[in-house]
Image (cartoon, rainbow, N blue to C red; front, side):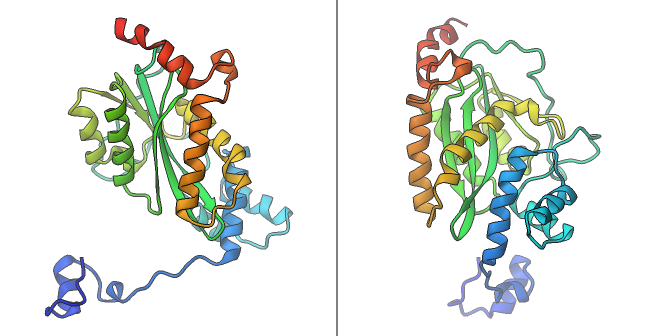
Length: 275
């Protein structure tokens, strides 16, 4: 965006693209090691107590010996992209101008693959930083259809995961997400609407509306992420690729009668085709 080799002065370039003069000289600094350790522990506590807000997380951390205040906890929660989950009035929107779609899965019998797909984003801690993970799963079989890592909470890596899943598998009838700005973005919703896929979104603060993805995150983190302090993004990508291969092809699921997601997905495809 800013070309430091261009003959046009940097200040003039900043004005033309709508940036402040200070922004073009700013160099991001890595987070302190203490903050990274706090965020790792907060991620674990959020999985255990998803209803805990900044005050409760502060108190839990204080009891463990971490000297941290509520405002700092709230800042780290925003950076991680997590918030307390509880039933609340739908008085806000994910992003001004972004449409929020109704939840379509209530009382819907999901009985075949590619009937409903779902997606969500979670925080992945590393040894010296963190990344965000988006995954797309088949609701009926729990199969992970695609996934992507990113160091920013933007829409592009979500669209990439969606396009990969659509290229590899038959498209779903319904696609369900939360109301995050990445999923309400027109680039993401247009990719679904252009294919005639119905869009469903969780009710505000209702984590159970996307419960199977939430369960996936718990499995991923306790069975893979927390066991390996990834040094680099490439190490995280390799580790997660290995885990998702195991998850789809070898890990038995009690809810699937001890079968794997791949077994149920491919064995049930005739049902989907008949429907």
